[in-house]
Length: 79
Image (cartoon, rainbow, N blue to C red):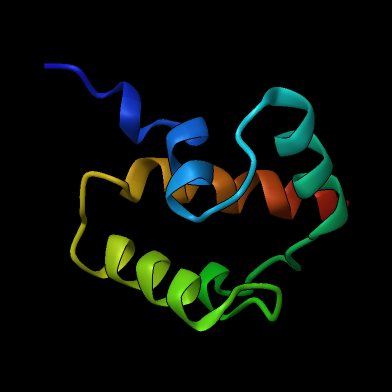
C-alpha cells in the first residue's frame, strides 16, 4: 500500500501550502501552536483548512497521522 501522499509533504499540498522542505520548515517556524491548543482551531488556518484538519482527526482518517505530526512540530516551534 502506498501511503506517501499521506505524509507531511502531502498534507501541506492538501492544505494548499508549499511542500518543499524549506517552505515547510518556514511555515512551522512562523506558526507556533501553544501546548494544549487544538491544531484545527489555530487562527492561521482558513475555514476550509480548519475543517479538513478537524475531519481528519475526528474520523481517524488516513491523514490523521500526518495531522498529528504537524501539530507536534508546531508545538515544538513554540518552545
